[in-house]
Amino acid sequence: MTVSEVAQHLGASADMFIRTAKTGEGQIGIPQTVDCPSMKEVRRIVQEWTAKTTETFKTVTDEDLETLYHSPFPNLDGPRSKLVRLVIDHEIHHKGQLFVYTRILGVQELPFPL
Image 1: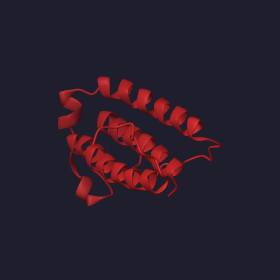
Image 2: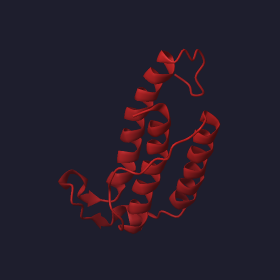
Image 3: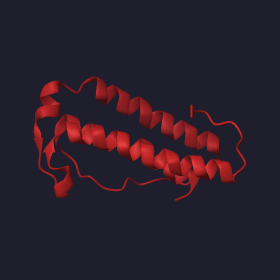
Image 4: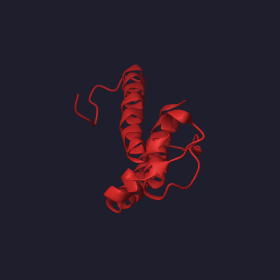
């Protein structure tokens, strides 16, 4: 995946998992990405995903998180709170990937704490 694809993947995946934690509906899969002419466009897309996910997350209740989710992926079966934990683990994994990419590209200062 390119830097653009990884960043978009993070934003779209978080939204997918949080929406599923809220509703129990939808399919878990690899979200689509779009070609971006610039990092400015990538940032815009990721910010949109983040805003959308934040709004959904604000509506998640304890009852939503305690409700059982039946997934086609056995490791995701269980309370929907598992999907929230998955967002965290998934983000850690891909932020590590982005860290390596940005260093290869020569970025000296990163926009997140180490």
